[in-house]
Amino acid sequence: MQNQKTSDNILVKNYMDGNERSLEILIGRHKQKIYGFIYSKIADADVVEDIFQDTFIKVINTLKAGKYNEQGKFLPWVMRIAHNLIIDHFRKEKRAATFKNTDEFDIFSVISDGSLNAEKQIIKDQVHHDVRRIVDELSEEQREVLMMRIYRDMSFKEIAEITGTSINTALGRMRYALINTRKIMERHNIALTY
Image 1 (cartoon, helix red, strand yellow):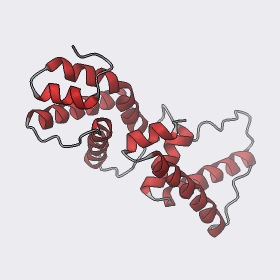
Image 2 (cartoon, rainbow, N blue to C red; image 1 turned 90 degrees about the vertical axis):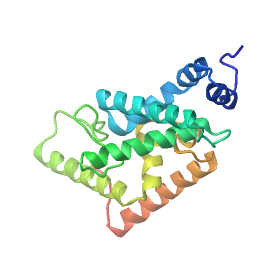
Image 3 (spheres, rainbow, N blue to C red; image 1 turned 90 degrees about the horizontal axis):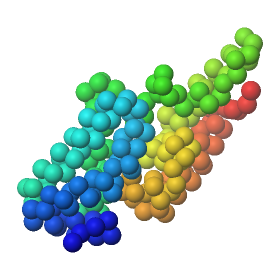
């Protein structure tokens, strides 16, 4: 009898041996993290749902074909599939972004003041421009960890699971993101104050 305590490896093996319930348990166990990861990149509920479903279609097809060989790394493997589908989505949309600002959620909307005068608004716009410029100059790995940690308030354990890396790697990427942010600010003589 399998339950919520059965390991991912056993559930994958059982599913590959024909036990459909095993996949239901795996999806239930990891749905929130996978869905949250996709949403953190896209923020359009309909597209997120499509990518989530496409992710598990790929998982099912790979498992049924007997091509799964990620022993002990089911969640990172699924996250990589989701990540690749997100990249495909942006390519199809002719956008090569790793994250997207939308009207529903703009990472810079956290700085809001309805009573800004014209001068403050110009300064605020410049700060937003500078922050975007700094973030865009980071490597993709550093930018991804920075966005997950600061704007999604994710733990380094969650970041490691989603990116398929160790916690130390996630910490290292964050450390280098901060170091490189300071270097970029110095190089461009940027001071983020207003």
